[in-house]
Image (cartoon, rainbow, N blue to C red; front, top):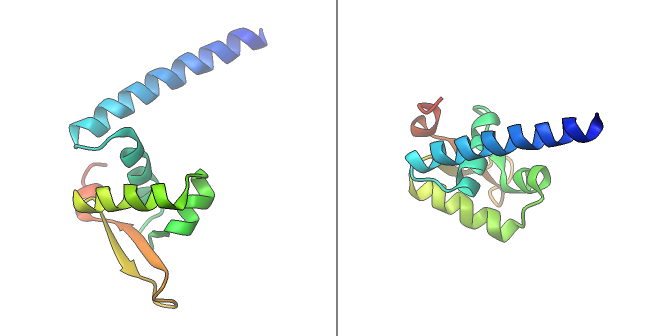
Length: 101
């Protein structure tokens, strides 16, 4: 019973991931970029820091930084200094990204 449930869950997750990848591609994003864009969008109006993205995903800071720069270049996110510490950068969704929902 547990094995059947496990394989059913994997099948559902695989199909969902494939659909998300196709959706991301329609907007010029690869799966990594789309996943990070989704997390930024989920963070709400206040945005999210690169450190928080790292903590949530476990992805290396350098890889996250490159991914954020790529989705920023495509106009899906903006990056601004934090009000309390200019060394910290806040990543927030743009209208272009919010329009996708």
